[in-house]
Length: 205
Image (cartoon, rainbow, N blue to C red; front, top):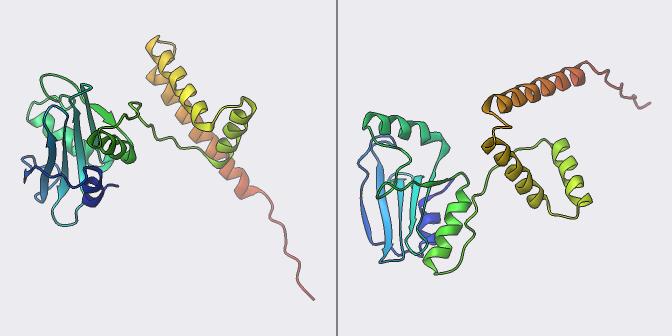
């Protein structure tokens, strides 16, 4: 979650403009607050004027021709629905270019901070991953055996999966089947744990 204060810290409180947000997908209290430096960057946050909750952030890095966007996951569908009603491409930025959508809140804040400060930044997109404790331990051991970091292992696996999708070796149906099998295994594990005899506690004399 991002609050307005997090955004203000990232732009070093360099506010250049503000206005009401014209769409209804974020509610009647949505406002737009932006920061701009000619030929360098433009960044804007859509936030709630009552509780300072940030719904979305848009970032234009003019020097490197990159355009990023982060949206709170709870409001993405509402945005997509209104974009469809308005017959607007939800992926489109300016001059028919496309946003690079970011999934992790810290990712957009880190990029903003670096661009505003005139520093180099990591152009890679952070991807949220969820592992069980057992899976995490397995992958950490695997990374240790290969003498690489856990993050490097995950990045390598993601790149491999993306390559398989691009070549047609991995399809959406494959991914869906894997998720269903994983869910079934977890349910069976829970049943096994529930049925496993519990040790009787010894009563103290």
